[in-house]
Image (cartoon, rainbow, N blue to C red; front, top):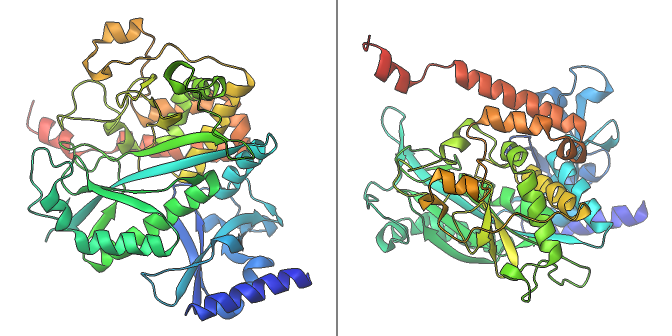
Length: 449
């Protein structure tokens, strides 16, 4: 107990020296949104005892009752995550793990990922992950409609455009500098394929750190964009006639010495037997993984089959893999793999936990992936894709949720409580969307008959 007090006192002193007066005690709900409360620095110790208290039923995805001991959700701080926030002077963030009735809460997304990280650690393994967030900078017009923030961003092919990128340097530089101050190794920022779309890349980390950093990236980007009068959006496909936003995962397994266990230059596509088995697990569970990595109705406007309305797409539509092939679900490259399914609406803790569970199943069963496809899948006719074994991913949220509901192994690995609540929320989301009347319908049918 004395040692714990000493750690807290040292942390409080360090943060005070850095000008911190308040903590944003932050957790992540099931949808991947940052939540929390402000705590004066004097009460830092409260976060390491019982934790910060929250009304459990007020948090998306807890399924907690409105009365009794289990109605209280407590977030206990992870001291290693305490960092001053450059965009919010006087404040630091500390990440919380969810506890209910004194026990780790299995529906807390961070606890969900911790459980899968422990499974790896028992085998002497670490999953390293580099998350590549794509996003839109938008602005509301006088009637509240959203448009790309830069009215001059109108090129048919805006990728890497100098003018559009430099016009947003106020946002780009403040975001990059803020993340660097938080320990991120930011190494590039670019303009992507759509008007108002950007990508920021930073160095990989172990799975839990990667998820924590992704949440901090989103918090910084939201605040900085808002200060400039913009809307930061990670909606997968905000515009039908433009490409959508992905959240590609560059992943590899390392042993206790940091050696990459996926890399084997002497094997096909540079992947070791371990790498191929992990990949096979991802492909085996891909339909169910869609629900967790592409978790919104809008996600499936990105995962299109055939010609995209935007004229270009980098999103996968089939269960497949290949050598440095950006048209496949998994791209094998440089002794690692790029998991291209996730989009920017994915909860990073949930998606990474699911990836670990699926990959470990492949390793445990020593699965072999199907033959790679090293051609452009967008140019192959459907019968050729079928002949090569490239099956179709779910094409809407309803299909993805159904696939997750029948994937018993993934369900058992992630926990019956979490999966049941996730399925409940997502089934309701799909039903609500399916019953809504959309502008497309009224435009087409109102006076058609």
